[in-house]
Image 1 (tube, rainbow, N blue to C red):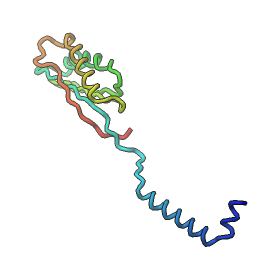
Image 2 (image 1 turned 60 degrees about the vertical axis):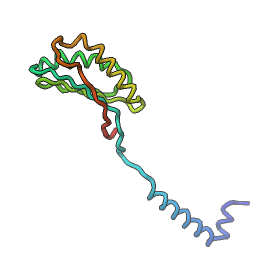
Image 3 (image 1 turned 45 degrees about the vertical axis):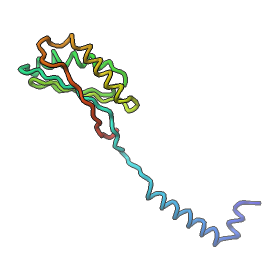
Image 4 (image 1 turned 135 degrees about the horizontal axis):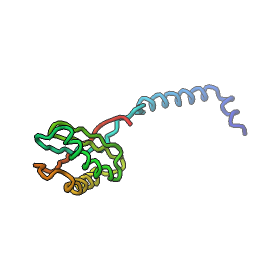
Length: 138
């Protein structure tokens, strides 16, 4: 038996079936959540170092650069940005989505510990870090 024959012999049932599928499709479309650029929470850690009285050039060369070298070796790091200003250095680390933030935090602490002997001896406090999530489009 030809499947088309069933629909040709019953035009009212065919129209009702088509209307039902159309209504179900419209109803499902309303509940479909899509976005061209979805918001994603990237795991981020910000490392801050304070060195009162140091110029931006000194901060960049003696604090930010050694920390960047150590932090740049971490697995799962997707982006690193830094800012050196008078007396402070801020390094922002963005990790891939498949890396746990707890694991990243441990790696950051290990990298800071490894960089301690490369930092100035008169640094009042060791670098600190805080975790956060930043929403950005991929």
